[in-house]
Length: 493
Image (tube, rainbow, N blue to C red; front, side, top):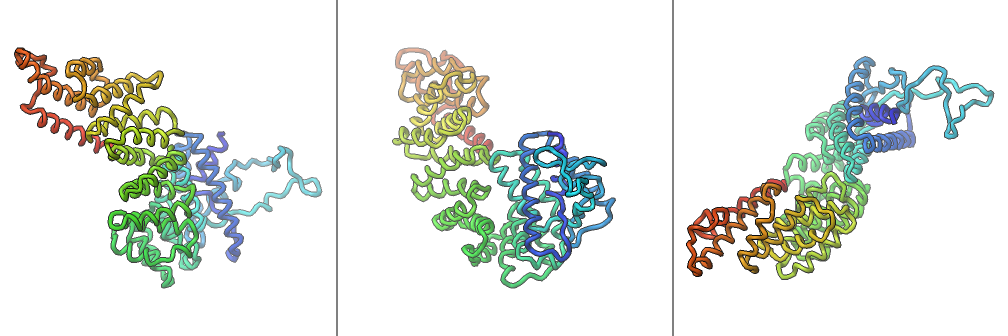
């Protein structure tokens, strides 16, 4: 494990390490180097997944080490990337420390010997001479992003650092580097993947690109600079059917986001193509989040339900899953009030495969929002469903009881509902739920006042905890629920 983490530190600093290649190397050799780079980043991301905080500490150490050793080397690769510092650090190309007299072991653990029984000479191992090409950097970044879609928080943090780390390398790359079509596409993908737009502006200012490449680069830059009209004009003119799948998916996702409000039907078709070209990647994860909402807005509820199930099945652990859950909650609360039974069944079907604790959180979130939206039936049903679960935490049980009780304000006897609410420990509740609790008591107080007056009781002697603060129940409830709604919106951001 320690060796893997040490290797990970070096890989994080230099993004899969610079690979050896003669200046006249053919494209086949570049592909092999890129493949090896991607494989090493896969190992690094796996180390990040297993190592947690230790892996991130190693990443910081590796990044600092990379800066220091590059300065000691005093040279850069022909394409402007950092030269491999490992060549000056006594390490092998696999990131393991090299020791004099160590044998090269095969998979079976036995020492590897030449035909004459001697150890292979160290000089036979090629020494790295240049850093990875831009397209190799993008492959590595995309792999880390895909790991983030599977819940690898460390990979998500590392890819953010690497976007900053490799910006200067892109800016220093020579004109010869940008003649490669793969690197041209990588320049666009760099900013579309979250890289600083200043990098692409610098690359465009220093280099001449073919006329058929400029629309992609200019469109990508306009998109990340939020120049929406320019971005849509430039990117929509591109033939995504002729592109490699990864680039096509990235462009279609950008176009779908640009047209989501003005042409949701066209945006939904773009997202469908993203899911085909980017299956299993962060691009599909993002497409599903938006597609569910657009399909529901267009009235295609069955399609929206399908996207919801697919997201929870594939990406429930994504680092962006919280954003999806907020959208999911809002969508199902907005379903017809009279179809609450059907809505609960659809929710249950969508979340069936995720952990029970996550299911309960979703039900409770829907319960709170349903109360605020006035969908009392749904609030009561999801609360009742939570209460059927054994070994609930005290806080979850209190929340569920609140939603069930508050959903019956106008249906049950006010005294009975008040008694049930008083069984709830207000201090355990979330601040937003406390406001719901207070609003419910306020409403009950207003309901009970005329009943108690009719019975000849002095309404001024009603328990102060139940007595209303405002003069009218509608005004009271509206103000409190508006405050709760504001809190909920803040939490969803």
